[in-house]
Amino acid sequence: MAWQQLHLQCEKDNVDLAEALLLEAGALSIALDDAGDQPLFEPLPGESPLWDEVILTGLFDATTETGTRDVIEQLSHEIAAQVHASRAWVSSVDDKDWEREWMSNYKPIECANDLWIVPNWLTPPKPEATNIIMDPGLAFGTGYHATTRLCLDWLTEQNLKDKVVIDYGCGSGILGIAALLLGARHVYAVDIDPQAILATNQNAARNSVDNRLQAFLPEDFKTFWQQQNIAPVEVMVANILAKPLIGLAPYFVTLMAPKSRIVLAGLIESQTEQVTVAYQPYFALDPKHAFTAQEDQHWQRLSGTFTG
Image (cartoon, helix red, strand yellow):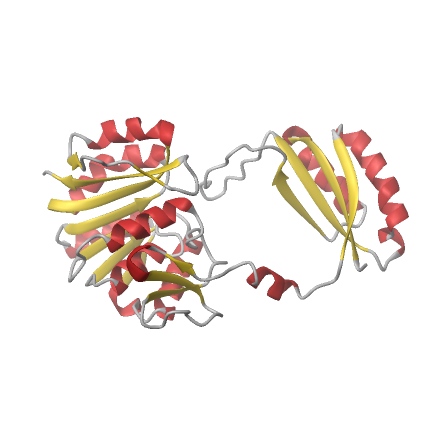
């Protein structure tokens, strides 16, 4: 056994103290996990929300004197008392090639209408299909999340031939790249996270569509749009969160041509009505506008046609 792990379950108010004590005791790394089933939505840059009950896992080198099983067992009792942990336990971890272990968790994903998402180190299982080659470690949007899959399925149902598309909240760039591979002429990708801009550009190059995709931070995109006098677009995808979607509704309509199409995602069922109310003044929603991800009944998407 090359590693020992000390696990502590405590309230979020005690997490900072628990982290400090673990690091002081020689922990090489600390991981935080949800102790219950409390959803945390994608945070804004600089935000670090925590669950109410957190499991901290400190990793120790078992080959050192301070990392033996007996020492870590004793340490678990001492730290648990100081942070008022409801549970504390120790586990052993075999040494592995961790990079390959991480990569082994990802497999090609088949979406609707012969669209595939393929991790960049794997060979597409169906070369003749529409294959999006992605690095799933760079930013949100690997294809494994229900909201991303809902948007990808929607894109495969649209006629994107020679269309200009905005991917607002682009994350890894997966939706914009899919639009280009499905026939779109150009994509403007926008995200508040600089890491997402980097990931989108890298993944676009990986799929040989970087000459037809431009990625921006929001303020840069507004400036570019105004200075270049860009014509309204015909398709928009926005896989973000309900609150920003509601606030962005009046802005989105300034970017879209009459009879253009939009899909909104990142919603849980209880938020659908609020988002619908925000967009109804501008869009004719599809008769069956709410679509629920089969693998997660909480997630929904809305789609509609701009009436302006």
